Length: 345
Image (cartoon, rainbow, N blue to C red; front, side, top):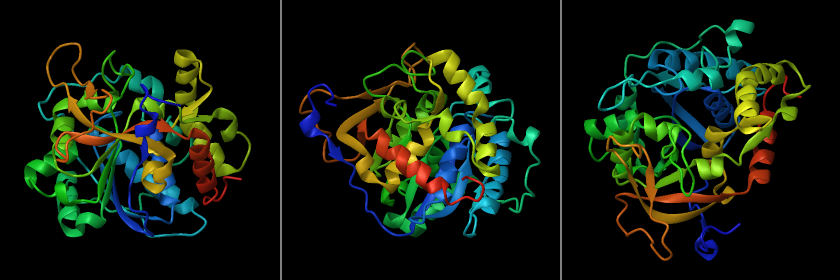
């Protein structure tokens, strides 16, 4: 269990555990993003105020469309109906521009980003109006309005959050916590040999967010790769479980071919779960910087893991870095919450 001999330093994330915590999810749907939204909507502790979308697994327009399909699809299947969050479109390019190679993303998430789910099944009526405000406006506004009661769960590239900082430099500094699915500590990346995908998509944005002054929890590849939902867990059941099985199909196929893993790696749902149940992950408070150069290390999250190298009291460039995860407890939580949907069992 220990990490570089730091076991005694590991601590559980100290996130205020409240009923109905106002929450914003920033995402790039994406198969595991859809699973993450499903977990959030099924969790009574989360008051999901807004979903903002960003370029990443899919282009920005597709991310917005996918979120506007996924949210009502999940909503109509909830056993106990609830108000659904508005979905807002976000950034289509990284801060410094440039194209993102999505060839591997298509292999993982399908042509439409959702395992081609709605080619096999009729998409639900949108049910959500098109919003005029964009993601960075909404993030800045909610951050200012809700302050320390707001949790932000960022499970895509961090461009929208960085643009919110540009719009209102101090807005994010006052939020309760930002939980980021991104980066990697003590292991290679998955976009390049050095960089995890979300950070690699926009390193400059990640560096801005790491310096925004908010309490940050970094849920990186080193823990998310242990959060695997076995494909057998998606077998049987009713119509809703069958839809999730279709959603995950390309992802499971990719995992089998590339990693010999028969299941879905729940990168993004683990970030949601860490906000719900802080005890799921053990963290070290460390200085974190992002490599923004043009060399092979571009997008790498550099975590200072030297023994005793606690991050300074200042929040700038520091985060609670997840080093361990109780994956069995996580899967129990995740599967128990899916029972909130009709047609799961």
